[in-house]
Image 1 (spheres, rainbow, N blue to C red):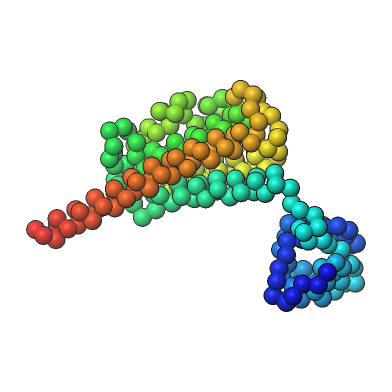
Image 2: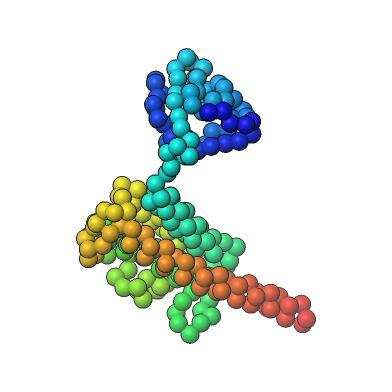
Length: 227
């Protein structure tokens, strides 16, 4: 099969001679595939510069299972919300990150601590059965919002990044259809949806709190200028 110059296709390995399968990678045919060491535009039989041959097929011939696409999309959404939660503290002072703007004890700094707790509960305890102390998280949802005098924006963000990396490593080894029993019997796909739901909810809370904080900052600046 020959593709017009400038097009790209996701390829799946069908038969590979002298080369590891390239599953799910994208190749650009208008550049002669130099980054793969390949020549020519025929995606039915790609000749490498070293003389070996790779046979591939397009997704039209071998579709990617919808379950795999769904897992990839859910992982993407979880990571997008993780970034939003991490970055909601950027550019704020320590005082602003601790501001209580609602009747509850919720603060932006506390929200990031809470989603760190969420990752520990659903992507560690629910899989491994480890206790709160062993994981290093609060013992209750309410307690996860509590701020210590030693908590700082860089410290809370760093702990969240570490927890997310541990979550990725743990969940990468599991299939959505696997069943775990660390916190009651649940399918792995259910854990992903639980974390996705909580992150989406708290990212919305964080957006509102950050908007209030920045508006408060602008208001105070205006009052100072008028004096």
